[in-house]
Every structure is written in structure tokens, then in C-alpha cells.
Length: 261
Image (cartoon, rainbow, N blue to C red):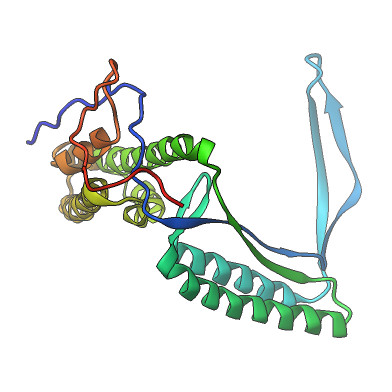
């Protein structure tokens, strides 16, 4: 059984991320209209002494065009698939390298054209259903660059920590969700930080395979998870942390500049 280092006491001081040159995008992908929910009957409600309320009633869903409702959901899902395929989701927005943005925008333009077709057809048949596919480029002011870099580094840490936790717990379902959120993280960084993330994700994928095999062989999930060697993931997490006294806990890549947009 491998003993992993105890990273539970890592200080909450985040080392800024060396963000690669790129663009943040804010998106608005939605399908609206053509669906209504109406309350059926009076139902009942009860007020309690603590001023809380318990109520029960029946609602009816009314869709003015089933085909358009399904089509609109497919369009919205397609738009998000484009962003997740090309970009790295962050709290600031979807990030993508400058050289990759044209291809992403071209694919999204096709989805937007599909939304226009839906909206035109919906209007012609009297449906209120509409699909909205909008994207906005966002620039970060010079005064906020360091704050953004630290927030993105925290995002990397959080998502790698989620992967590590899911593997240790032997939770393959939770891991699948965490992996989807973490798989594009290397696109955010440059230099040694990017390499560390890549190694961590490769280790996570290998550990997931070992975990699945152990569970298949009737080993308890938690027991199998604790036996995994997660050093590469924990090292990457530590790479985005500074010590309490402010001295860097890692060796920086001298060839990488600060965040540039």
C-alpha cells in the first residue's frame, strides 16, 4: 500500500497561474418560450409555528410544439459542447488560446445559424419557442491581472483536489464529473505549470483505470482508493501554493512572463 503525503494542511495562499496568451468569453446559451407550467386545482398549504410553510399542489406542463422544444435543447447542448471541446471553463469565463479562437467561433457560428433556423420556423408555426446563442469576448484590465491569475490558479487547485478526493474515496461517478471539469486545465497555463497539470491528469486517468479494475475484482471502493499512488496529482496541487511566509514553494519557470492578454 502506497502512503501519500499529507497535503491537508497546505496553506490557502495561491501561487498565481502563468496564464498563456488567450481570450476569455462569456456566453449566453438558452432556450426560452413555448412552455408554460400551470397550477391545477387548489391544493393545500399549512403554516407552522416557526413561520415555515408546507404546500402541496399539482402542476401541468404545456408545450406549444414538442419538436421545437427538443430541437432547441439540442442546439443549446451543441453550443456548450463546442465551448467545452475548445475552451477551459473558469469562474472568469471560457478561456481559449488566441490561435484557437477562430476555429471555435466558426463552429459556434454554425450552431447560431441553426438557432436562427429554429427561431424562423417557430415564428412561422406560431410557437413561442426560441433559441439564443450569444458569446462575448472579455478583456481583463491591467490592474486586475494578478487577481485573475490567482483566481485561475485556485480553480486549477480546486479541480485537481476534486479528482484526488474522488479517487481516494473510490467514487467513480463523482470522478467522471470532476474529470469533465478538469480535462482542459492544461490549456490555461504555460511552462512548468502546464506540464505539471498534464502529468497530474495522466496520473489521474491511470489511477482511475486501476481503481475500476480493483472494484471489478470485488475490492471495496474506499479501500482501493486509499491504495492508489496519487503523488503526481498532489505535486501539481502543491505547485499552485505558496508558503505561509510568502516564499515560493516551487521553482518558477524563468522563461514564462506574467499573465498577458
